[in-house]
Amino acid sequence: MCKPVAVACLFVLMIGILVGCKSDDQGKAANSSPQVTAKKEEPKPEGQQMQYRAVCTEKEAHGGNEYLLTRWLDSKDKVLPYSREHERKNKGHVVRIDERVKP
Image (cartoon, rainbow, N blue to C red; front, side, top):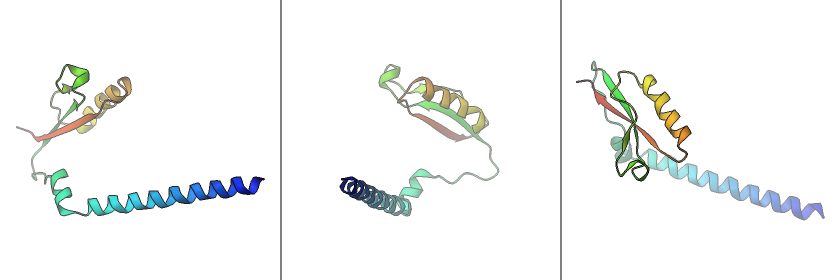
């Protein structure tokens, strides 16, 4: 009686492994595309300082606008605690870190 249950569990496990491997391969293929990497990463100007700010992207929860969690700060390490705290207090909110060259 235990053998059919064990076989069924192994079958489900194998399907999970195969699906996981296929999705991993698709992710690698998407990341290797030059168009995708060009959109996500902009080359940083050398010798210039950057500034960062945290922005909540959940417009519906904040009156139809993105919610600025911080002003422009010189360190990404100073911005991250605010973004994590907002995500922790407001489950499901997505916080984006904006980046710019220091004016």
